[in-house]
Amino acid sequence: MNAGKLLFAQLMDFLPWTSFARSVARYGGDYRVLSFSCAEQFRVMAFAQLAYRESLRDIEACLSAQPAKLYPMGFRSPVRRSTLAEANKSRDWRIYAELAQRLMLQARKLYAKESFGVDLDAAAYALDSTTIDLCLSLFPWAYFVSTKSAVKMHTLLDLRGNIPAFIRVTTGDVHDVNILDEIPLQFGAYHILDRGYLDYRRLHRIHSFGAFFVTRAKSNLDASRIYSYPVDKQAGILADQSIALNGHDSRKDYPSHLRRIRFRDPETGKNLVFLTNNTTLPAVTIAALYKSRWQVELFFKWIKQHLRIKAFYGASENAVKTQLWIAISVYLLVAIVKKRLELPGSLYTFLQVISVTLFEKMPISQVPH
Image 1 (cartoon, rainbow, N blue to C red):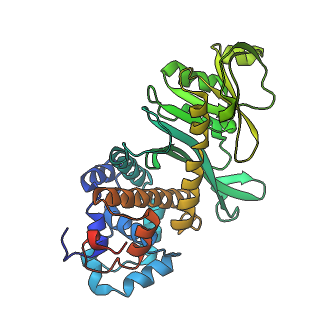
Image 2: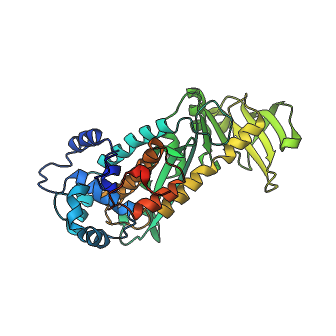
Image 3: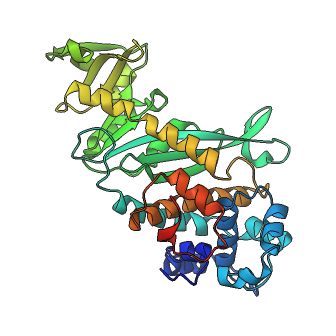
């Protein structure tokens, strides 16, 4: 890495700028733009994420304090908050969504051999969503309930490395279960779902594709036992059964047999009932898979704490989605850099150090850990 470059510029070198340029051209992002290109807009917004800037005025003031370093950072002219606000409002958010999706592919390849605590040969994904509350008067397009607005970030998380494999940003009134129609399925992979995604027709789509799911049963499950498998009660397995759904509609939506596992959690003492279409994995592994679903909750908690996604620099739908997708891109970029350079320590520590060294000239590999 070139030690003569600012650390911020070194980070930006890891981005797939050729792919980004194709996205900019596809959506006309730089059409009739004389200054402040989409690439500069991304750099500013990425800087705001990395340096924990809270507002457009904050961003402008921080960059204005380092005029001699703007050009080495990739800015051809001083950054004005009015220019940035207009860019966030008018430049198509899909430009930055496509960049994030490209980075997802890169990061998942790098983390493909990471362990997530369950001995499994296939890939495993956890699906969930997080809600970001907004002010109804400022964000009326994101109407959620009568008193507030909100956006949801629906995420399919690859548990190997906690890297998103799919993200969809919607308004808060979109029900989680609808996202099952959109997630990309992978043959032989495991999809771990909360009870909010329990829809038998959609689950049968996963089954018919040749993929697996693990979810929680609802308390009103109406089913008949077909066969009981031997269980290891020492491991907390109370029952392991093949079942058929009884309800007319549910049986029509899911005509195949399901596997029902009753499990007593040794940590909480709670009895949990899992449903899956996998018949070969040990019951304790199914229980461990479902427990690993909490990694997606930790992912949401992490990005809300360490990225700027709870306060927005603009109120339009385009500005909000632009900021969210760029925040996701920054998370993925830092994960990619950390993995490629084999840097020790946690992602959190790496981000903290970067936030105070962006204007420094040092190789990223020598950043204190």
